[in-house]
Structures are given as C-alpha cells and as structure tokens.
Image (cartoon, rainbow, N blue to C red; front, top):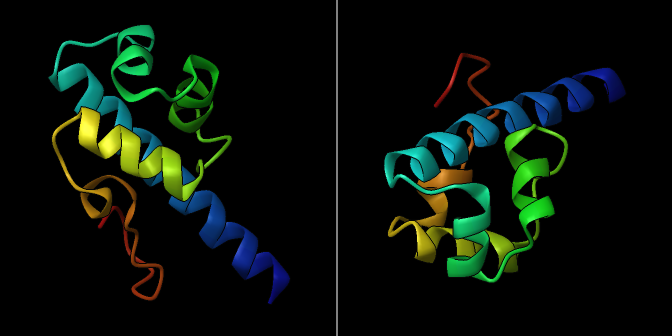
Length: 86
C-alpha cells in the first residue's frame, strides 16, 4: 500500500511539473520572471518543474494567478483513474 501511495505521489509531481513548465513557457516567461510576477521563490518554481516538490497551497494560488489560470488546471491530478496525464 505504501509503495502505491508513493507511486501516485511521484506521478502527481511529474504531471504538475509538466503542466507548470508548459504554462510558464506558453507565456514566454523564465522561472525568474514568473518568480517576480508570483512572489514564489525561483528555487521553488524550479523544484516544482523538476518534479521534486509540489509546493504549498499558497504558492499554487500565486502561480495560477500569475499565469492567468486556475489552481485546478495546474495542480489537480485524479489519482483514482490510474491512467496518464489528466
């Protein structure tokens, strides 16, 4: 059970990493520029995009606002389906 939870968490991090990077690049922003717009540390953005960290609720809200999208679009992952990216 513990391994399943770990795999789902890793999958979630990977999905979020891809979404955040795609959204940032879609706006033509560097991680430093997104950091300035969102007040989220550049290192935090890089760690999320690398799939190391999911961030906090506060950083999710700030990033979504800076990228003119929703928290759900960036961070929601349905782990009950067991398929690829949601």
